[in-house]
Length: 195
Ligand SMILES: CC(C)(COP(=O)(O)OP(=O)(O)OC[C@H]1O[C@@H](n2cnc3c(N)ncnc32)[C@H](O)[C@@H]1OP(=O)(O)O)[C@@H](O)C(=O)NCCC(=O)NCCS
Image (cartoon, rainbow, N blue to C red; front, side, top):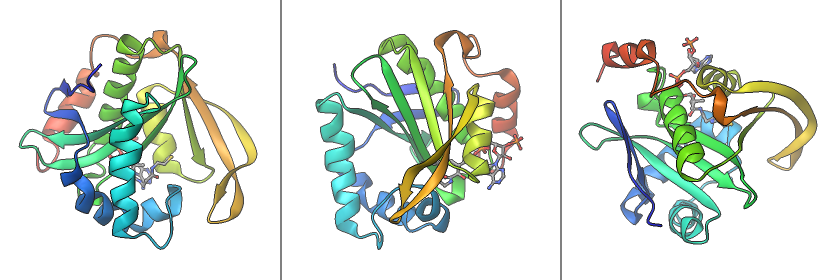
């Protein structure tokens, strides 16, 4: 199966290409990404190259990950959403947004579309979310997309060599908002600056 492009109102999720490497590098220098996403530090262009070629393009071919670039109507890069596939019908989400595209409801919408595709096309039975305790933006996105936060996992993440507590949550196929993204979110997106 070729990795598809998933279209939604006003944006799309498309596979990564090597042309995305400089953009991945630039976003990975953002302080919030460096604080909350487990990436090498200091982050180098070679890390972005490895991420795109191996963890995005190669990992889809190995059926380990489904990584997508969130793009706007003119093809502009807005962020990244991903499913890490466990090979047994479950997946773990990951996401970050370009700092210029934040606070417009886009991460929430992109996550919903990713989950819809994962349930429908990959036939997943469960999608899990984990974040470092205190990452309220990530938690809000997950909850707005329909995830239920279930527990705190003690010291479950290793971040910059330190063990930190993690929130864990999940969404089941029947919990996704029916029939595309909610109208309210769509309206919020269309009213937002830069649409
Ligand atoms: C988390 C992240 C993806 C959110 O992206 P976004 O496009 O700004 O999110 P949305 O616009 O969809 O916001 C959804 C909700 O989260 C809230 N939110 C977003 N950023 C927030 C912040 N920094 N602090 C508090 N709430 C925040 C929004 O207000 C909105 O809630 P509301 O509708 O009740 O107001 C983005 O901040 C990011 O890339 N962070 C760094 C990487 C990261 O932490 N990734 C997750 C790792 S688990």
